Image 1 (cartoon, one colour):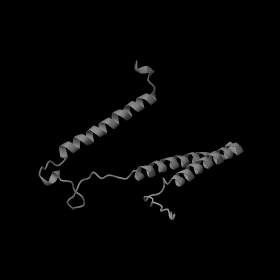
Image 2 (cartoon, rainbow, N blue to C red):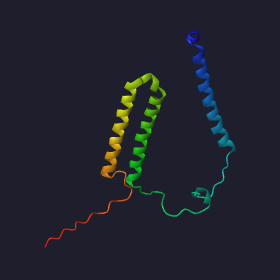
Image 3 (tube, rainbow, N blue to C red):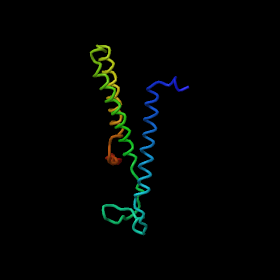
Image 4 (cartoon, one colour):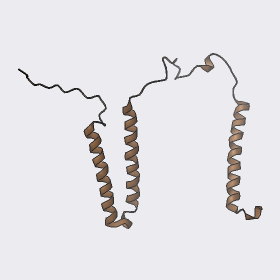
Length: 134
């Protein structure tokens, strides 16, 4: 039964058992050696020696999430372009044209986001019409 298991499988099994043993040892030592002081001040949050005021539940604007999404999108773009730049000699002109189309599509998307105001941080001011209706 154990003769079929290769040396790599044994090494992986020993690694997993060792990792679990280290985790259990650290948790056990923390439980045995850790402090057990109880008190009213132990349950209060500590913020650099200053008593906390107010609630921790703050409402963030949706702009923060939009900026995070834009970052992820353009960060993935950088990953694709890095992979392309590593293999630029092997891909030749076809790869260059494909990368140019890819960058062009992303620029079109960026211009679209800019035009609809998705990149504007402050709210837009209403435009007043100066029409005289006399």
